[in-house]
View 1 (cartoon, rainbow, N blue to C red):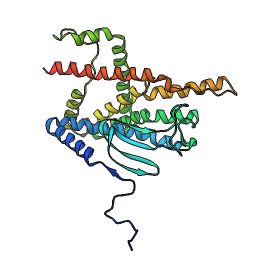
View 2: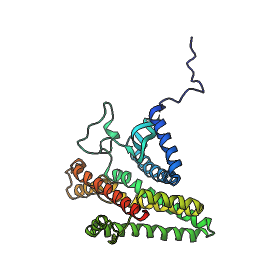
View 3: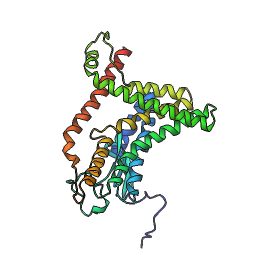
View 4: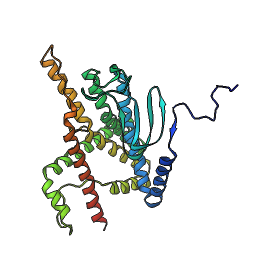
Length: 308
């Protein structure tokens, strides 16, 4: 007769690990650490930013009655994961972002067999949906304030002075990011012209940091101590929060806009339920993703041109 008590060396229930994708992920990180150590440092910074952002969505979603089923860092094939309380937490092989899976994001979306309707995003109140969507970017902004203040404290500031300094730093990054995006959008013609001018004589109206430049700054920040590293983490966290608040699908701001508009329309028409289907915005979502890819690729072109 076999003892059915769990042995200490057995994996926890719900644990999954892919040897193939795990080996690929480890080999990729080892290659990055060898060829570009600062790139690995950037990956750590972005991992913190992404994890806190998605944790904000996850915790508030549960608070308002939704049932999240996945919390992952990365996209693509799964490297490892573990299930806890009906939600699978883990890492995927492409460390390019993260997500929390909520079912019923649109009125027309289908649910997995047996999944309760009351646990969906669409069944939550407008306030609950709005809070869930805004939680990610707001956690990024709160994280930025916390690390800015911690950096000031490490440099000898008092707590009140550190908090004032953190507020000023936050506003500086928020305003700077918004201004840069506006200059880029309103000056797209000169920006494209600067890309086509291989001589570099045409200056771009605004520049963004490509992953190469971000990696260089990350390495420089770590070399210059904890306070500098915290400030760089705050800048990254703040920028991610601001960009996600833009009302463009598939960014968080678009979902917040839909939930807000539904609330306003339902108040304006008592007795009538108005539901807006975000699925109709899919073509605009592809356009937004294309613009973001172009922005990253063009920033890389300009940075590589400076290096060469």
